[in-house]
Image 1 (tube, rainbow, N blue to C red):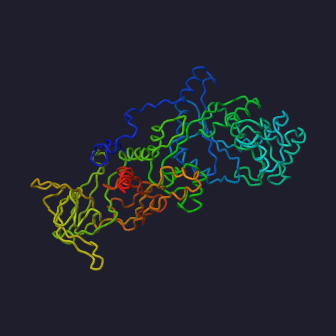
Image 2 (tube, rainbow, N blue to C red; image 1 turned 180 degrees about the horizontal axis):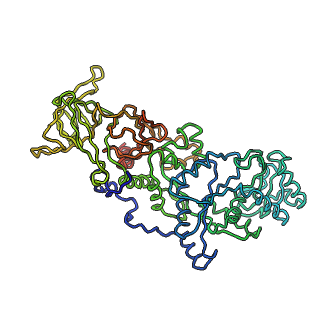
Length: 594
């Protein structure tokens, strides 16, 4: 039910606690400008590239996409669309030891789900392996590359660092013919891994480490997911990436800030090879999101060490994890637009992402009732077998969502936390002798409490209902402050509900020990599984990935992996309000008092 509704959650009104974190007018649909667009505008003004705009999204197929990649996808495809240009999808598949077909397919699926399409412009760096090899041969012939026979450790030692002076490789003056012969034999598979590499001859004393005779080719006797065993030498990323851009006619090579120091090398290869197309590399700040990590290597570590159930675990910042949790592509695109494009790295509060999600789900999620921790309620003055039905709208302010009938029977379930035997002041929920309103139904009054003889735990409430209060309005006009959600015991469905929280306890899990011990910051309470929840009967047959607002509890999604026709499993996507900030504030206050 992807209908539009006013910006509301239950009452149809915004509250101060849920105000827009970035104070943007939500009615302003114009795409904001940024420094990348300014560059493109200037290029078009000067008729650079004949006014053409061609971008690309170039993932390495060695893991699943995360929300940082989503920012790049939105940027590259968005710019191409805005300037009537093109955006290629190219897999930079130059490392067969880490790449798999499953990653290729997951990336394509994620991009489509986000709402973008590359049309017939699907490419692979492996498409250009022969051409890249010929470029390498040309560099050798031009005296700009040589085969080096130092070991990996020796190369590292000879290159030095920011504090240690570099030394030229003893092979940097190797004759051209000898390097050509060795490269051909490397390609033929005559040498073991590590015996030789091909290096560019640039400047071993450059202050930019990337320019200190970088490796162009290395031996890898691994089967490639596309080329099989045809190749046993593979180009390095820096070499293959810029030339792939050039071969595809890319005009603006947009990448994240960590590639800024690689730009001189990007330009050097294209200049030395005198290619017809020389794209302009432009760097922007990558997305750093609080309470998570944005490194595929570290995400893989979480998966391999079983801290999460997989790449699509709903606690993961991967696109597949967010999708399984119940995020919508619209909310992610909106988030990427709101955070904008900057030149300097910064940390974005995950609360903004959650706000964008609430804002979107508020408009498209039907309202239903579910009870997560059921407490049995017996309506003493309703006869056995008698069932009342009450009409309940799927949205409080938008009638186009329609409505459904909710059954009311002698035995109900309410939320356990909605009852207190000895309530505190200003308690507006159920307690002995008190009245509350049941959502859409009527008013009930608690008349008795049944406890477990051994544990003293409350196991059952006995209440009476007021038949004259149908719809929740008492005929005598008395004020009822509390309203509870509920379900009928006989008619409700059993469900498993998974409550997810932040994966890490610290906003920046990598700030200590250079991030080496980031798993120590994992939140042990990031997942709580409730097995005996009850949901209203209208959810029978709910389709995977369907999204609902469980009234008073939050937004939930039918799990697309574990939920079946006989077993309902819901993932809590996000609470109705950002309670995390309140918890942190309370903790800080408690620490201050200590």
